[in-house]
Image 1: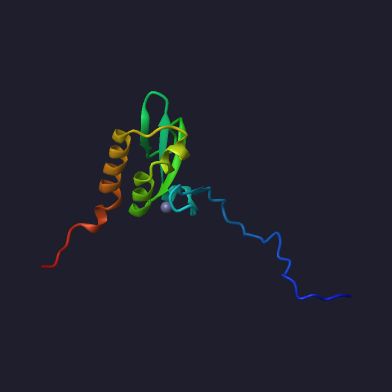
Image 2: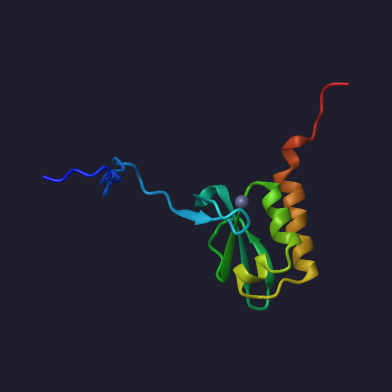
Length: 115
Ligand SMILES: [Zn+2]
């Protein structure tokens, strides 16, 4: 028998009986996350780029996590979003996404009670 101090063979790790959670990758930070903790952005022909809260709209989708920084990254870059959606993203489209970011993702930080 030859014993070598190589890496342990730990293949086929059992994940218990847990339900499989669909994972999607944020286009900005590239972190895989549960689909439900991401916002889907969809590009559909004739309608442009929209937020898809239900995740059921037809079209090419891209996912961003709930971190406003990721939206900044995706929206400030000229190619992250167009590459993910395989379409051009107009200034108006970006404005819509930025408004969603401001309303939905940063709303929790307002309402200071002290002072
Ligand atoms: Zn992200």
